[in-house]
Amino acid sequence: MKLTQLATIALLAGTAFNSLAQVDTDKIDNVIKASMARFDVPGMAVAIVENDKVIFAKGFGIVNLETNKKVNKDTLFGIASNTKAFTSAALAKLVDEGKLSWDDRVIDRLPEFRLYDSYVTREMRIRDLLSHRSGLGLGQGDLMIWPSTDKPVDEILAGLKYLKPASSFRSKYAYNNLMFVTAGEVVARVSGMSWNDYIEKNILQPLHMDNSRAGFSRIPKSNTNWATGHIPMDGMLHPFFVNYLEDFRGAGAIASSVSDMSQWLRTQLAGGKMPNGEQLFSEQQQTQMWHPHITSIASKSAFESYHQQFRGYGLGWSIEDYHGFKKLGHGGGILGMVSQVTLLPEKKLGIVILSNQQAFSALSAVTHEVLEDALNLEDKDWVEDLAKKHFEGKQKAYANASPEAPADYQPQLPNINYTGTLHDDWYGDVIVEQLDGKLRIDFTHTKRLKGTLEHYTGNTFIVKWDEKLLEADAFITFDMDTKNRVNGAKMRAVSTAVTDFSFDFRNLQLKAK
Image 1 (cartoon, rainbow, N blue to C red):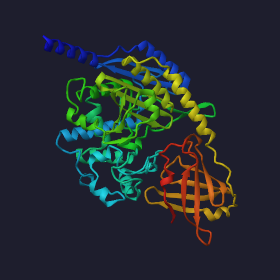
Image 2 (cartoon, helix red, strand yellow):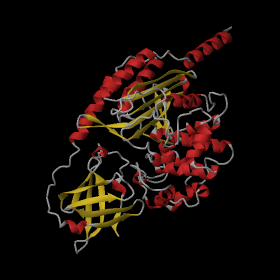
Image 3 (tube, helix red, strand yellow):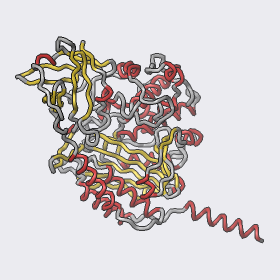
Image 4 (cartoon, rainbow, N blue to C red):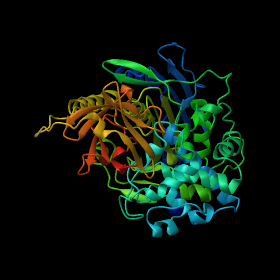
């Protein structure tokens, strides 16, 4: 009798644990509108999956301030780094098919693969490419792909060997896109088709993500339902078109909608089983992708907000605990556009949010409100809570964005002394020339990186890019020889709080040609 009672109690407890509090979609609808208004987001699309059903999929606002066309559930956005989980899934399929192992050496799949350290070159495995533990620094080498370059993948791979590691191999988490570009090329070599083709034919099409594409240029001309990013500056929003990070390939190139992404969420929450009942990848491979391969110290602010005890990174997925539940997810950022995916597997809950303004906090506020409902948590105004932190942070960042006056001002040499071609082994050529009495700089592989040098002090100048919306002003300091000719130059962002980390000027080793 006691055993029967215990079994009944256990069954009821398990049922309660796996059941979901009903997400109040009317409330979420209002939260989305409030968040968009508070953070000045022109357009947002949201889908929520609960117990293998899409309970919410809707668009809000407009795709472009210049057209006022409405966002709907099928509007395409650049999902940016949420692409990384698709690249991992592609490799998982190849592992399931016996064509690859997570522990294969990268160099055995890409014979030309080389990193700065020969030991790391030899020991780097497929799983290392996907877990941000290569030893490269945050965003290191991103100027080969950001913002939109003309470099083909073979040149990107050839540049890797010149990137000096920021830490020892597998010792530290540091977010790096180039390893996912490399992973995408592994997909291509093993499958015999391009990363783009493989993703579309073997993941997007089987999932009936019919409008999604592995690259902006692959969107049919007949489909005009896609969003343009917007960047806030001087109290206004400015539409800013980018090609959804097409150069990022396996690190960030997919264009998708919340309608399509809901099928991806359902598949993830079902252990790799697609809505049509077929297996996209095995549960065994999902276990690998959802296992923390590298950890980092839990955030104090995250603990105060939702009791984060640990955080780590798997294979294309960020992993942490949220009020005692395992939470997986990822963010994605493009100039003027951000996305967020969140999964609570134990609660069979998934959320995807796509937007066309670069305010992550607006998406996080909506996500937290959904999780609050699902977990029966104490009611909290996440929009206002995160808005306060967001705007205080921005105010502080922009207040310190301008360079301080130099303590010991020194005059510059004649402009002509600084002209010439500089070369970095992994990026390529950077030209400094005098035009109409001004010093101009040209990153030859990057159309958007053209600007004017304004003198700061001595042989140090500030680069003012022609495209101000990049918010990437940078110091450049020239190293001069005894004849006052340029030997080389070093660069760094004027404000690391404002400038995106992918503008990795700090990693350039420019030498005169």
